Length: 155
Image (cartoon, rainbow, N blue to C red; front, side):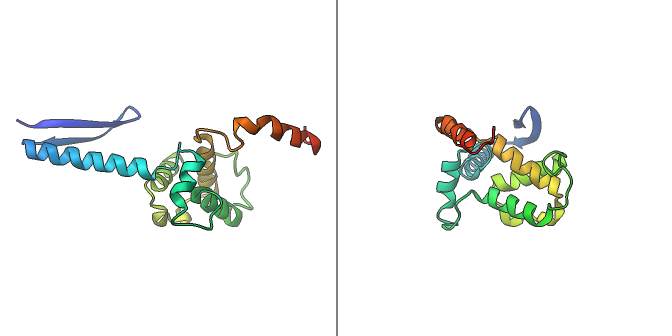
């Protein structure tokens, strides 16, 4: 008799795992748990700026912003200067999903930015900022930020 585990992500079936005996089941459970923990430890989307910076500090001590922001903004400054509607025109969702997965699994070295359009990378940057648990300008300084904005005539 075979046993089965079905894994779903956002309601879509991703993979079915089968095993024939208890040892196989234990091994699969261990590997799945390790994979989930690895993903949680390296995830950048949906994680606070403080936590991402804390995690990246050892690898990149001179970075003042998360690597995902640095990499995407650098790309956009170099490749996106002449792209119309850089933040308005949507990127390719399949490419963006792949790029997000690579960032979330600490695989930035595997990202070949030449495979992406400026709209794809702008979409990744927008998605990252949108998924932050707290805005870049936190709620506790919102009023102060608005006051500064008004002082400089940007109403």
